[in-house]
Length: 173
Image (cartoon, rainbow, N blue to C red; front, side, top):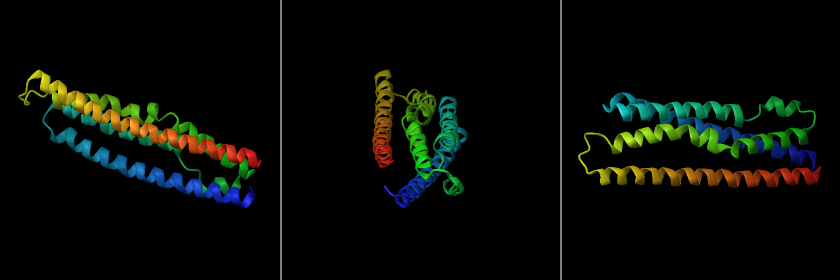
């Protein structure tokens, strides 16, 4: 792998990270706005608490994404003493972030989702038998579980791609 090719790959990688993060921040903005509104508009205290926890979880995820998964600045790339070492370190840093999404990306939403879904399913205004309420709660949790599993799987696939890129870079060195 030539130095020019490594530079191109490093730039392309950083661009992808910037776009991924921008999409994540916009999505988090929608989550904070929607669940923040629910925290004030829905007159059920448990649902309000769950919505507030979900909004807080989204803010935490943004903070952790910036801390763990931010893109390198262009100046960092340009000033790197060894472009190969810089790109490898960036690949490893992103790999570490993606391999721990359960802790910092999905986990922060769990308390809010449990409280929110429980508040909806077991609201006093919902005139339904306990079995129907339990069914609503467990079905909702099932859907959330499927989404979480899909997110975890996608991130695991991204980790495998990063492993391949790291291996290719190591072979070229």
